[in-house]
Amino acid sequence: MAKICAVANQKGGVGKTTTAVNLAACVAQAGRRVLLVDLDPQGNATSGLGIPKGEGEDIYDVLMNGVPLSQVLRETPVAGLTLVPSSMDLAGAEIELVGQPQREKRLRGVLENGGGDFDYVFIDCPPSLGLITLNAFAAAQGLLVPIQCEYYALEGLTQLMNTVQLVRQSINPGLGIEGVVLTMFDGRTNLSNQVAAEVKRYFREKVYPVMVPRNVRLSEAPSFGLPISTYDAGSSGAQAYQALAREFLRKNEGGAA
Image (cartoon, rainbow, N blue to C red):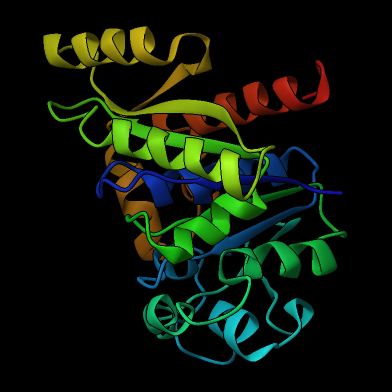
């Protein structure tokens, strides 16, 4: 059974999709079979891997119309990395799911039935704590939280942790904090260092030692439909996500990388 990780933070602009795409790509490049589920109606993970949005069936059709997961899988520029694309249709699912039975568990059922061919599944969540994100939390064993090294870094995290606690109590007792990823780090500024220290006090050993730096190449890569490790493997952004992937694999495989 695949290890399922939801990449989530209801605060936008924290490097959530960047982390989901690039960590998934680097884990795949380390020889694992990886599925990335784009669960954000904005579809940035989809376009960031060079897949056009709105062409053919996607995660909306899987969740709402019963289309088999195997029917929407798309190959990506990275060997071993498969994508479930998204589109703006998914925005409507937030409302459509309200009256449905087992509404929080749609994605869990989909992945239990169709995720067996993968070692790891990463879910890129929308920047909200609505029903779509709850579906990700219900399906996942681990939650990866990207936090930007900026002034409002911890804003909203209490709400996120409260939601996780509620999910544990009522839907998914196995949901844990997989780790916290510090993003947009600039070691030259006091602010970045202060925020990093504050996040480490809050999350303690859950914070990954690798911090993702601000990096122009990292910002450019999605416009070329490539993860940073393919677009510019020598950049500081690529090196950070490669190191993060090694840490992730060591944590989950007991020393393997």
